Figure 1: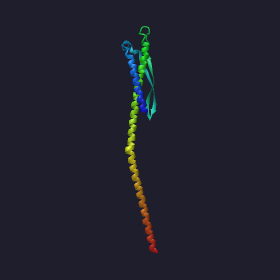
Figure 2: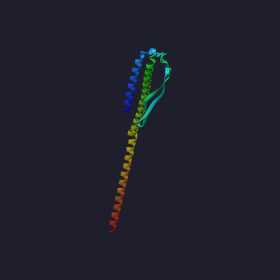
Figure 3: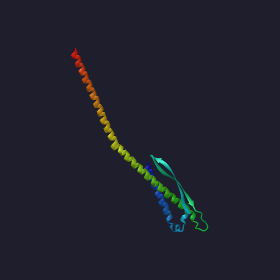
Figure 4: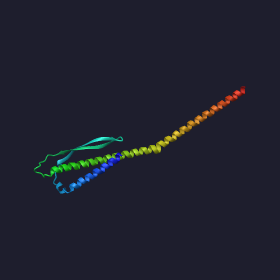
Length: 164
């Protein structure tokens, strides 16, 4: 179920990212004059959540370093451009983390499936065979013990009859 949730999240983030990029395509020419060194990611804040014993990264936030610039000597759209860039970068990082989460969960599911198959198809049948052999051995021992008791009882009866 967690794998399905992760897959849906990753797909929805991919769609949102594509839409955001499509929105920016109209202004693609203007982005050529944008100074890319203005915005830098200084930290990606992530917390980890355990799902089925596996630590999974969960996106919290991005911390940006925005270099100061003169608003009056640069194009006025740069302020909204910085916000757009922040949103795009956040979507990209969040999508990457969702992809990593999906891969980790898929790997854990694969390993768990392998273990279940090992137990169901190899180890449990082997233990059932061993239990059956032990049961038969104990039944044989019990039968031999009963037979030995009957022999001893018969000998004692014959010995008693011989004395009388």
